Amino acid sequence: MLFSEQTIYVQIEKDRFKLLHVQSGKTAQVHGNFSNARLAIANFTIAADVLKKGVFEVYPKSFIRFSPTLVIHQTYNTEGGLCEIEERILKEAALSTGAKQVFVWQGQPLTETQLLDKVFKKT
Image (cartoon, rainbow, N blue to C red):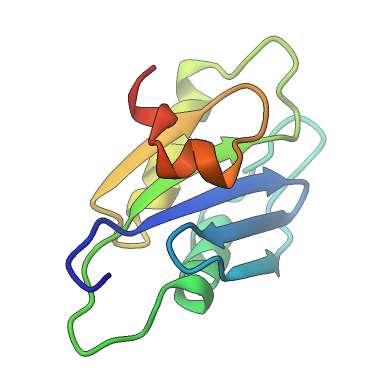
């Protein structure tokens, strides 16, 4: 697992990130006051800090730490889909964690099998 791709699936709810490290199955939930009535991430600085904390909780600790791939899935305030600016906010927040690659997923929540099969790369 040391040299294999590391994937973290992040679901965004109101003021909460739910994280799953796909390869280990480790999960975490981290909270912060970053949402408002219109945006899942209304305060970027707080959201980025909370997301970094969550990634640190689920990402395996080792001597050599490779940058993970983040699949970020907003489940709050998604009526009509995400606009380009919302997608950019999600990507920038994910990249601020040190991720090497970020995929924004829209649709039904992904299963562990779908994540392992990398369906998020095929769309």
